[in-house]
Every structure is written in structure tokens, then in C-alpha cells.
Image 1: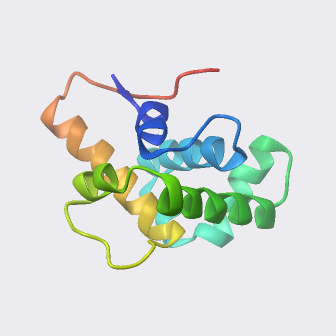
Image 2: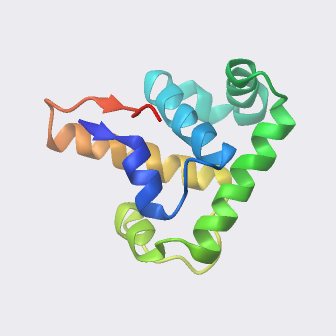
Image 3: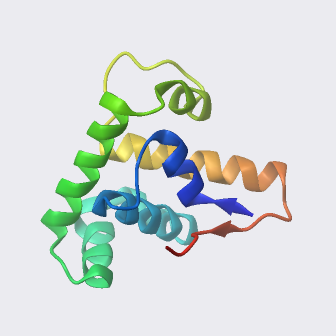
Length: 121
């Protein structure tokens, strides 16, 4: 199984961060419905906010903080490996989501028996 949380941990995020959980949920939602990628602030963030009983702006802020943590203290070489290119600047939240979703989809195609999962803490 493709464990999205394992990927996030390998990038340098920890489960104590809200952004970690928001990224995990966001990737699963986008994998279920790619239209979420076209409306992050209008559809994805409100859906995550509803699930976690918070506001869309809180979701946005925590996701941006998670990207910042990955960029400053995370495993950039792994990020570049899964993205397939070298970064010259910090990726945006939408770029990070695209990288994570694309990586999960490529792993699904490589290993069709695997399903996307989120491990519970």
C-alpha cells in the first residue's frame, strides 16, 4: 500500500503539525477527485476545514507552514526525487500537492495492487 503519511514523514513533516494531517487529507481528496486541484481555496480547503472543524484560512496557513518546514529543514533530495526535477525556489502549496498526487499516481501505476492509504496515529 502507498502510505501517504510515510511520504510526508520522509519529507520531514511530523504528525504533531496540523499541516501534516491537512496534506494527507488533501492528497486523498485529490486522488478521489482531481477537480479539487482546480479550486484549492474554493473547494479543497473548505472541505478539509469542515472535516477538521476549522476555517479554510487556517487550512491554507498550516499547509503553507508545512511547505516552509519541508523547504527549510526537510528532505529536499527526496522531494526532488519524487518531483523529478531540481528546485531553484520553494514550491507553492499547489505545486507540493501536485508533486505528492503525481507521485502517488505513478506509484499506483507501477504497482497496481497498491492502494492509497493514510495510517492512523
